[in-house]
Image (tube, rainbow, N blue to C red; front, side, top):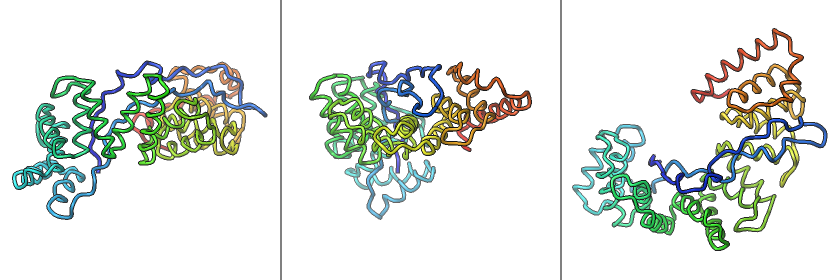
Length: 344
């Protein structure tokens, strides 16, 4: 079960932590002994987690009705059952947390952050880690109560101490900009907790820290291992980084075929760097058979996102008019699919 709580930490991080540096457009093509350069990295650190963690398993009694209705999108029923539970038991923290979520999201009731904060506060006082995390996020953003970063961080500490993986992840993101050895080491410990709970952004963050040697010694093997786990969990920047590692044999066995597969997956995830790298692979016939029409298609999509590439421009000049039209048609149709999140 997931509670969908927006997180408002991005403004607290330095620009380098959340921005995507521009990829170098004139890198040499994939050739023997060469690979897409690491300068085309997606970003230095991940963005804050955008959803709360799993709600703990509830007892198999009336509690199932409220959360079961919530899971199925039956929000009016969820509201009814959760309200009845609280009326019957003023210590039902899980039901209070669910009511807070319904008000925070405006599900079956008008959105009301102040009311949501009230329910989260009651549940937090009764020890519910999910409510503590939710209250921290509202406090961080000043929704429904006064904005107070110090209080929000204390609430994140409390939620993380209760084993809340996304609280651990977001708390780590507050520590990393402090740029001290102690803060980095603590951030790594928090990220490890979240990563082991399969929070993909935490897995990606750990990979970055192992690559950079922040809070841990540089370890390219662990970097690649965490990139692989994050990539499998659909973290698109990790998919790009993992593809680069595979192409280069950096921390993992070299495999141009696997690199191409991950570039393609990230390209379908809308990442223009991956689209550019996949276009180069298809143009050069590395990891995939050469396919100039597909190369041109992905090149056009990357270019539409602002990633120019003079090498691909020159390489694809030999396309016939018919091939150019096919690529343009493919790019147009693929752009529509990407806009609506429709994969291959």
